Image (cartoon, rainbow, N blue to C red):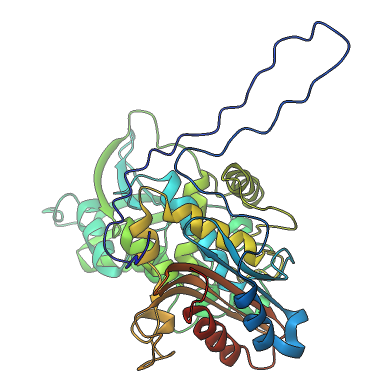
Length: 419
């Protein structure tokens, strides 16, 4: 892992063998002997629990100074050594660093060429059904193609307008937003409702409060423009009708593009959809449980960790800097590691970090995920150093000047002294 540069395949070739739970034979006496914990998977280093670089620990402590109590900072190398750790097991609100969890589970649970698909079906009674998986880039051009197909592969030759009956399959409104999203955020474009059928991610300048109604209006208008008439209704979730025929499908950008939307651009809608699809449920409670279960299965430090949503907009989320470092270490040894780290912003060059540390020693050397909500600033990612890659997570809940502190922490870590 020394000298890792993101965007180039890691070529690790590691077989990630799952832990196998040992089964004890039925006891022959009244005494029960506890078995030792199963070893970690082959080729997958575990994050150590003891700090091994007191020099770096001291330097980072000096940077935090009197603000130490509102910060959590953890640094590890590629072998799993915990080089420095300040309040690393203190649960804090992570803001958009939560997306590192959502994108990790999506990359692990979904196939590498995964796409989000919107489909048009013909039901046995001749009516049509439109289904979706939350494509964040579904747009009016694609909607026009669906309208054309709904009109009969190009429109009707009858002098009377063709009448098209279409059902839109959608989640109930109670599932459109994670329950903890503040009302003032739900009206903003970044807090738009999360639905399966979403034109431009349910946002224009502001959030679209009723996405099915907007879609009905847009689709009906397009069918009318093409010479037809439409009766469009919204129905609840369920499988396509028995013996239904798939007429057409539109696919989203691929997995790499979806990950980049979530991490590089910090797109809340995409992160929420990825978490729902990866956990196999659009029910928030079910998705939360399955996410926590997946994290625990990776052997990560779970004390105080609470996953509420996939984007980090909900203030009920709680992560630790040590968990995020352990997660990145785990993903660095994943077969799709290059996709994970290449999806992040780059200091001074790309995404939410494009305006930070330009023309400094950090430019192009730090690949990270930012997080910002009121009173919270977090940055976690991979820092290239002369001693190899360093996985670093920095979370503040209440810092007076967090951006300045984060820059100092990165520079001190990059100085090395922990071979």
